[in-house]
Image (tube, rainbow, N blue to C red; front, top):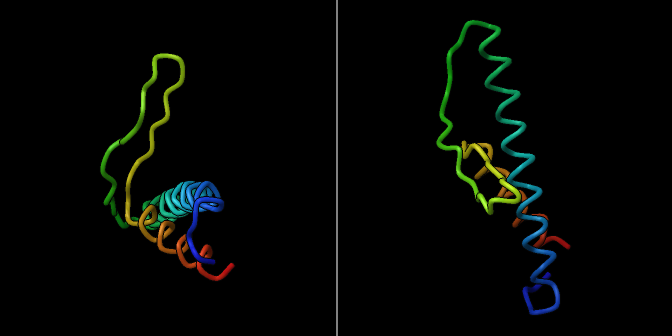
Length: 78
């Protein structure tokens, strides 16, 4: 799908959901490896937005970037 004004919000939503899913997946991988005795922590953050009413924080890790790449691929394939 080509990016234009009509589908820009769809792109942002796909990227947001893909980044969150990638972060969660990476967290599961880290915790699984920790149970096996392998310590691996590549997270940076938390990075977030605090608007005094609502606060959103996300740990940025390699899964976040893998999720973003998957989101771009998904958007392009639609």
